[in-house]
Length: 198
Image (cartoon, rainbow, N blue to C red; front, side, top):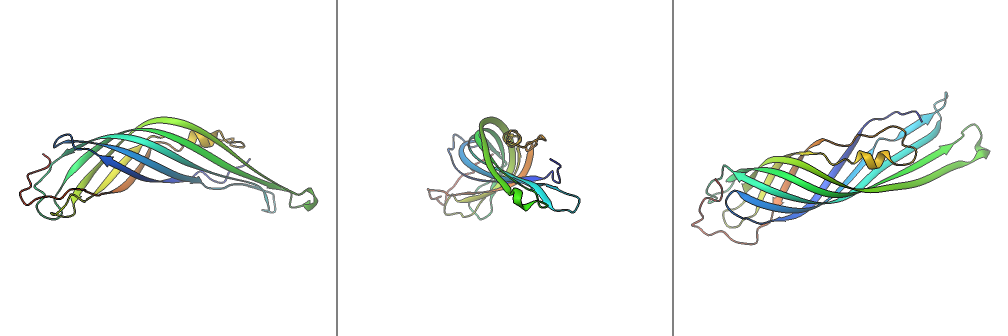
């Protein structure tokens, strides 16, 4: 099949928890879901009438362990005090790729049309890295907000490439992204708070 595309994107949503071992080491456990799609692949005739089309996307669910390292802290007595963080990440991810193939002969309607759906799934191990900045939102509790840059090497493309009619390898790996994390604290800070990170 001729191709008219080579672009893809995905979105990640996650929920997690962390545990403070000391001032600089705060491991996190995360559960993440991923949604991704590829631009439609089409084949047309000389009159630019559609002969075939292939739509592919993927969904994934992953668990991640993140031994978060924190530094550059300050006393969190006032608003917008925070620290920098490094986020090494190990992930175990189940990927499910799905496809839909459509074909027709526009010059011979009597031949009818064909619709076919198919899927492929696999489990992947991967490592990644993030860096960012965390800021305390209130001096009265431990709620906070973090802005992070991520590198992720989960290979979503392999599952998509194994779908039926995927004649060209698909590369969805080595992604860079931007993430926002909101931390909900379940304890209140007292007025004599000491520096949390160094």
